[in-house]
Every structure is written in structure tokens, then in C-alpha cells.
Image (spheres, rainbow, N blue to C red):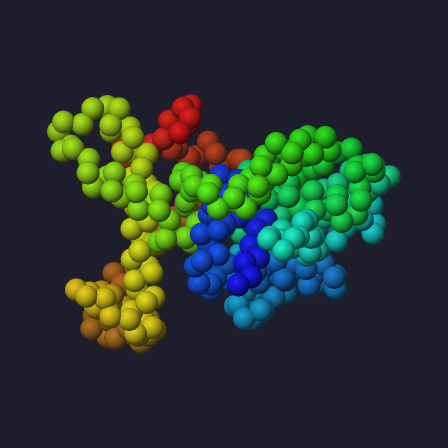
Length: 362
């Protein structure tokens, strides 16, 4: 029986580097359809490309359905910010230097393949510069020194045989939830060194069936192989066999706290998996599907308002008016005016919580 070709995706390359075994494990898990947030992100990318190719304003699409998604003001604003970054790259490198939604193959063999679609690539042999840009529509902060963008840069170099023509590589992250475009600059030699010392060993470990899973927060967070990962199961056993809380030493507490986040992710993955199995008809002893708690809401706010006023209630009693938050105000203000509200704000913590000491290695 032929061995299934492993698909190493650029979008998951940071996880592949952190835990090479995750690629082999994920290949054993059935395909999971993208969630609503991912579908919205895909539609925003497609809208930005459409507007770039046809010189259109993304804001024209507010309230319209595009790629099956009803485009909100925020969705179109994200597409517009992406479009602006594309224009900025084109202005910097020159006309005809930019390609949008470009598939870039990196490596392929009978055992594995690596390749993906870069949001934006800009190449100028004249300026000896390569720019790779990526739009992130989620809220999770993405650093500009991104492994995904480094892989796209390598693929662009390979596809265009650019190693002798490019000296500087710039990686751009466009993430509207976190403000201005973030950039990371590196030399071609630094990119090649990353490939040699980081990427290539990770790929070799992916192909080594004896290489064990390496659990960590970053590797496990979005891995869809949690339910079959032996390392996850081992961590559950470690937590289960821990001594009573009262006798734990500080060292034991540190170890357990490190494992708890990953164990909680594993538990959530098992619950989600069980729900999907039961929705398809599976029977799991001791468990059943039950409706979530119903929350009451007005069937028609307009009719409810009329009836409450008919009952003698005043408009001030049945409606609420409150000042928008600083974050909401910043979104409404032009960029040049946003800093002016900073003296009017304060940041007050609601208390203390446990957090990782970022100064210590995990």
C-alpha cells in the first residue's frame, strides 16, 4: 500500500517546526471544515484581490454578499487596508512588480509537498528586494518575523531563481485589529540560514516516524490532532496522578501549571470531537445531545417598544444610552486624531491573575 503524501502547509509551518510529528498525526484526522471566522477571512482576501484587479473601492461592497459572506463595514475596511498595503508595495518597488494571491510551490517529493498561496509578493531585481505581505483578519497577534512568510519568501526565491538577484527580504503583516502594518527586514543570507538550520531539520523530523510529538502552547493550540496525540494523553495522566494540592512543592506547581493549558485544550478537543460524532449519529455511553440554555430576546424590538410604551413606560426607561469605549472611538476617528483621546483614558486592572513569565524559557 502506497504511503500517503504529507501536505506541509505554510500556514502551519510554525507548528511544524515546534512539533514535526504533528504533521503525521494531523494526516490521520478527518478533514474539518473551516469555521465562520476563517470563511469571513477568506472572503475579505478575495474582495481585496477583486478590487485590486478591477480598481474598485471595497467600501462599495458594504451590505452586499461576497463569496457567500455578508460584508460588514469592518470586513470592507479590512479589505481596504490590505489594498492600501498592496499599493504601498507597488509604489515602493514599481509598476508590474506585484502579484496578489500567488501560489508558490517550495518542495515536492513522493513523501511530502510544501507550497501555498501568498497574499502578496513584490519582486524588484532593480532594487534587489523581495516583499512578502500577508493579511491577518483574526485578533491573535502575529509577529512580522513570521515563519509562514519566511517560507513564502523561500518559495518565491526558488520559483523565480532569485538568489543572485535579491539582497533584502521584507516581511509585512497587515493586521487591522492591531494597528499599522508591521515589517521585518532580513538579508537573503539570513533567510537561507533559517532554511538550513531551522526549516530543513524540521522537515527531516516530519519524515521520521520515530520522532515523537513535542507538546507546547504554540504547537498544540490549533493542532487538530489533539485527540490522537500520545503526548496529550500522557499529560492528562501526569495531571491525574499528581499529589494533593496541599503538598505540592513550588517546582511541582510550576510543572503542572505549564501542562494545564495544554490539557485543557485536549479536553476541549475531545468534547468538540464527541459533539460532532454524536451529531452524526454516534452513541456515547453516559452522554446525550441537549439544547443549550435558551436566552430570551425580543422577536421584534419595534413591536416590543410600542407595547411597552402602551403599558405606560417612558422611552428613557426602556432604552439605554451609553458612551462608546475608547477602542470604539479610535475606530471611528481618522488616524491623525486618535492620539488626542489618550489623555482622556486610563487603564485600570480588575485584579491579579496567573500569567506566564516571558523572561523564562518553557
